[in-house]
Amino acid sequence: MNVVLVTGASSGIGKEFAREFACRGYNLVLVARRAELLEEIRKEFVEEYKVNVDCFACDLTADPKAVYDFCKEKEYEVSVLINNAGYGDYGNFIDSDLDKALGMIELNNKALVALTYYFIKDMKNAGYGHVINTGSVASLIPGPYMAVYYATKAFVMSFSMALREELRDDNIKVSVLCPAPTRSDFWKVANGETASIYDNVFARTSSDAAKTGYQLFTSNKPYAIDGIQYKILINVARHLPLELCARAVGFLQSKTKKKRNG
Ligand code: NAP
Image (cartoon, rainbow, N blue to C red; front, side, top):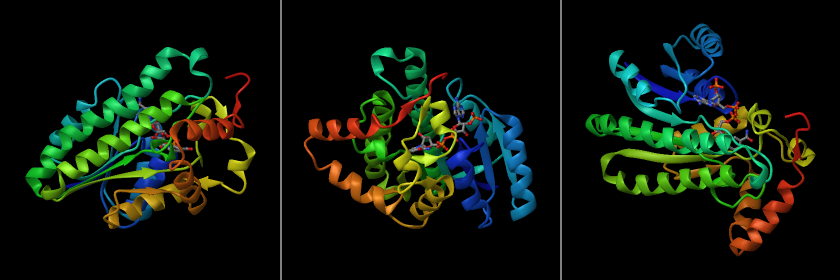
């Protein structure tokens, strides 16, 4: 059976990304750690959209190959791989939890690379495939107070664009979704509270980001920034000298609040 595989599908952008495909009749494999949430989403999508949905609950930092093995065992052909699972951490790097920072690299980068590696071989044999990696607006600029997170997302963009070029003649597309600050559990996990400006004029929802992600699937664009406001802002910022860009982003990021009891 042909499927779309979405990681980080138990909440936020991943859940809505999966919905964009389910509502158009695509069968799904949903991956994340929280099995009970995945099961709830599976039931909802099967009932609402009459598609086949399977779930695989795992920690992607522990054994990403287990996801591939699961799909092989069930004879799923993954023609669309959405590497969306990820998290961030807010605050000064010097005071941060090093294990959380290194775990972020394991999930945002290492697991993404591993899953891509396994699945694109089958896509090549099948003669078709699409890998959509969830980057961020952070993929395009440096981000003081979320230094490691921004760096992991810059990795996602660089890796994806290079791979896109390598696979150009193989009918396998690689694209990057760049969400802006979006209402989801992300900020709770990141131990921050978005600045009020992000929750007002610039507010984006998981559904907004997922719709922009789906547009990548139907177009040949290499990447897409979610939200016109952010397209303008980021395109101005990324053309500044890097040090000045970091200063400007640092100023904006300093408006985000660290959770007091986090
Ligand atoms: P979210 O609601 O916290 O979603 C994160 C997802 O990743 C959850 O489904 C979580 O599921 C999964 N996940 C976390 N650790 C995992 C692990 N070790 N193994 C497997 N799955 C894991 O946040 P979100 O906003 O939707 O984030 C989705 C993606 O968008 C991330 O890559 C994030 O960096 C990116 N992004 C978010 C924003 C934003 O402002 N929200 C902006 C730019 C980019 P479990 O906890 O069940 O494992």
